[in-house]
Length: 249
Image (cartoon, rainbow, N blue to C red):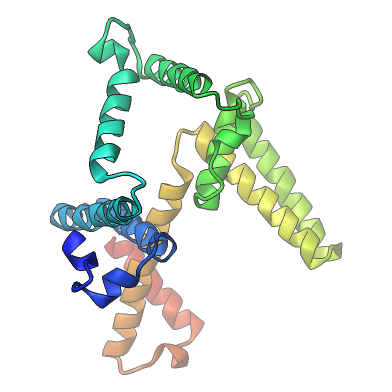
């Protein structure tokens, strides 16, 4: 990467900045997840290389500005892992994963205090840059740590029905803004249900998206074999092929 960024290197690589590379970081992270979902282990190896390239790219740009080097980044994470795992590298004790998470958060808070950083409010600890489903699940998980939560999944389902009724009412009488708000509330409760059921909402939806892609691809392929474009197929024909795709899964 240093060679690519050199004055006689690659014109494209030389003109990149922290901001222009950000989209590629997200794109490569999602491609890693796609490989995992597909259980494509060879592809995962390649995608992890692409993802690591983004870290190298950022670190090289930082090094050129004398901000830090990639060695600094690797040293920092190594030290952090040792510091936050006293039950492995020190005299600490942790019997369960919950013990580990609780101690991790305590050490993290201690570190912030030692740095003189202001204590964040509870929900400020959740980044705003993550996908909305992830953000919603993390927000409610944080709130649950202080007891702001439902007692069981049945209560969340009851709330879900309540939100469905409110959305139906907004459809009849509300403005588009009200409808958007009610739909947002409905999605938020669904994410809560996923959390209470210990399901990752983002990953659940990604898997459903992949399933939809696969089944609709079958519909399109079958219609192509019949010499019929999608635009000329009836809903009944597409639905019949969709059901075939479901049976094949």
